[in-house]
Length: 445
Image (tube, rainbow, N blue to C red):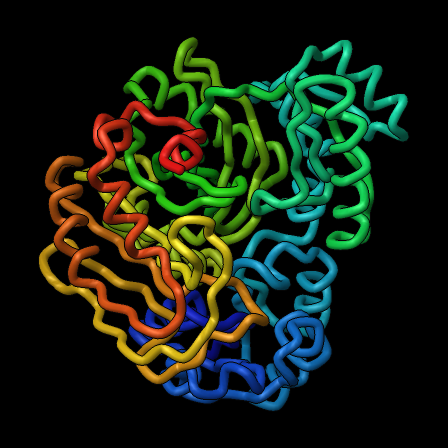
């Protein structure tokens, strides 16, 4: 097993990785920016290294500073968490070229799945269902208009190099397409350094369902169930649950088999997620993208399958067998995760500030993965995620009741936060029925 681990991230995910590392007797090393010096993950690490100012480009995305920190602390491995450099193939290559262990998929898999068009084509070749769309980037606006006419409106205009719900727009007709194409292309060039755009069929009423996969050290790829991720604002997730209320045993079998094929197609190792769109009317599903990293919402899978995904990542990276029997994967119970963000609960606009009060809920089936505590300052430099409230139980109804109690007990004063939104959601009949789709938040607003 790896003996020393540098966590190239911050906040709740750094804290969560550090927790598992220390449980396993692994020396946990944190890196932090000047803005994060007082956050819990820095204090909880065995060692912490200041790597730069608040700007992520000068700290958490600064590969030279991170590698220098690894060298100065004699780290054996690097875990990138999610975001920042986690899906940067060049960084993965550099880590390994430096003689360090990369806790994630190899650079080849990251590259193959990082380009949305290339990923679509690979998945289609592997027999994974894909939505109607372009097999090459739309070279210009005229090409996009031609492609949309062939696919049929409405269409989704997507940045080929995008991810995390960013760089996407919907066009219901040609006029809208002309506006969205220019907008998405400009955003993609600015954010990803790649203005390539693809056009796909857009499904107005659809569910977002994903499958957790794990590529094992012996070469096998296993699927650890599905997660429902349809409660979203601006194409970004707010709530995830497992199992999905929309997935029947027959559909689950097809969905998980397709996800395994997706992983096998790129020789996948370590943790990854195959994201799909599900048409609840027909039961058809389509490949959306593959996230070549640990997902924010991994805790719901951990509860349902009784494993620690970070530990499994470390075991794969160390060349060890998993803690579970890959031939006997039996899900049990239900789990829901709610993302507690520093944002207005109505318009979901960021609301940084000093946390005056921070009281986390406790109780049976309640877990809080937090990046902050009372007295900390939420700055505008990073993602607005404050904590993840994860609730588990034997049934969905039991989980929903526990969630209501936990949300009512979560006290945060200072920065704006979206806890009131979850109070509202947990009384919403559409959500409670389980028959919701990606438009639920819009209908609530």
